[in-house]
Length: 276
Image (cartoon, rainbow, N blue to C red; front, side, top):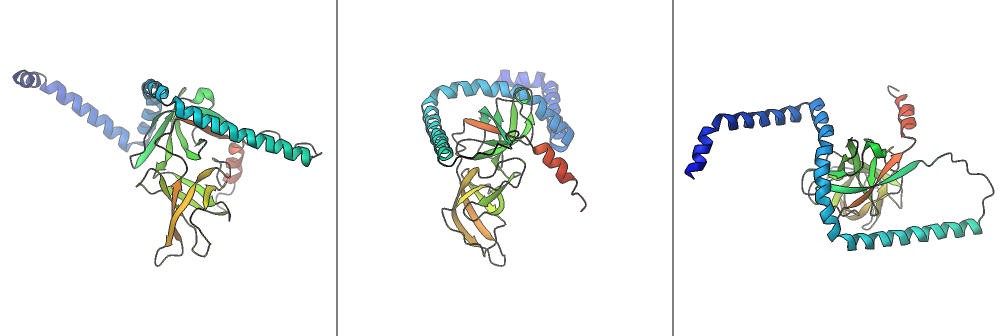
């Protein structure tokens, strides 16, 4: 103990200097948008390498669950493929395909860091700009919507998950096509709130919530969750709707990044409506 006190006494000024430096950097990054963005972009590669090494060990112990999920997904895709082939044979279409290119491109990625117990949760992926990943691309998996990409480095990317109070997802009740906005309630990692649904709409427990398609990030119809309960707050005209999320953020491992190939065209067109 005496040696510790002597060490602290000898290095008091150095330790005080280092502490003040750390505090200065934290304050600069926290309260200046340019410095914060620069720090996130430059730190993606460094932290990405660290996260990836820890993730490799975890992968070994989760191979069984991963294989089972991939097998189930392959079976589902195979069923959809053969169903489509059967329908084409039964109802042939003799007109040419007018679609020049797919509206959405999907890039697989591995989750190397993920949080689910904070007010503002983020996700880190092992793909970056070299693999075509850009900010504002959607993130999904075989269970449903995961989040949106925000920052990208050459080999890694970070994004907001649904479990982040800064993110809102345009969503709709599937069977009636009535849309609202889904936001995290900040309480549980498996529930969120669907807002802006008027109380005259017929809503039932168990109704499916999917993406509305009213954004340039996610395709229409991607699974988000199911309604578990709802009520109408006194003095308002809208439901309080609680949604159980379909994605399990505690076991998140593999995802797909969604690229809208027509996003730039949509943004350019919609920018002409400014001021109308």
